[in-house]
Figure 1 (tube, rainbow, N blue to C red):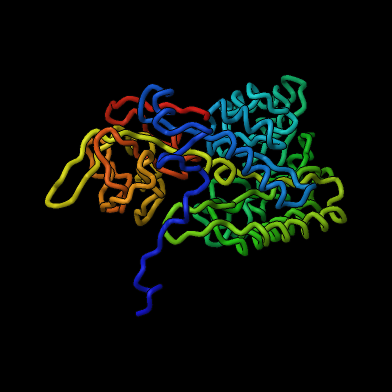
Figure 2: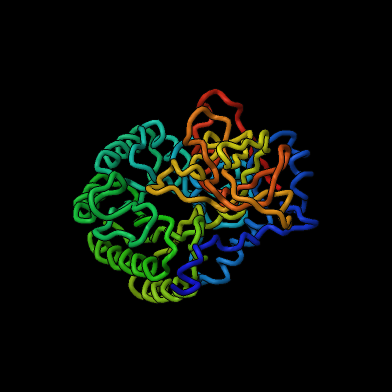
Length: 414
């Protein structure tokens, strides 16, 4: 057995936040001082500079004529959405509640789109009144929007969300291919387009989203190419020229040991090829990629304070004042089949030489309340700050904060 086989995989370095005097720095502020500024633990902190830097790096890597949209379901914190609205070209929402946040943040209604498989009539009325683009996901929505248009006299801007006849290979969460609640099956789209034309609705284009959290660029490139070619075929049945084509996202970030950073170079080359084809074959279409996790996930941390250091039959448990009720995904209860550790550190002891293997657990009366399982960390004591990296997406709002009646955590921009 060689050395590579004996050594277990480790997390990629979490070096996007600097360390000064042994302490993590977030938004230019040492972690202990930030905790004092917040006034309590636990909390989520999102670094403005890292958000800005990620968008800038992505724009530099991708074709210049490609539009970048933020899928705010990844993190709908109002202050963060306001920051992102000034960086990206558009916002994608998944409810009327998210639509309000996007509009309040100053996003241009012409560049807001609305997706979701169960849009209610009241939400559709709000969307029509706001003048945003609605991604139709069923034949029912055609009838609802036709009725709203007749009642209000307001134009309904629509795109068709397509459930493609393929999936994003190696995707953490498959959103297309096979039987899905999302979108309209590709083979049914021509009939849907005919219904849209008959209803006199304002057709603008297509939305295809095959999957999420993918770290294999070749899989993303293949899915984007297939999405474009499917849109070309469907455009032949459209009641108007395609002016909007959302190729989805799927860009992943490394959460677990052995996972790499996503290589953007092949994706950039693939999108450049699509953009060149679109200029000739869909000349009126605006090409869009829709990203959430990739834009915000690495810019956020979850911070909790150790309240107890407990030894049970020779194993050390660091008991913290937060847990799965604030960060369900880090506990492994948000889609993991086999639980794996997120990258975790003792944020005020980043360069400490004394190390130990511990488990980090929360205050809840369930063995599921586990944020780090037998993980090597700096030796810590009560009062130290545990940090969970990669926490900028699907954290605060994706967690059951009312579970067992413990206090809610806070969110801050730093």
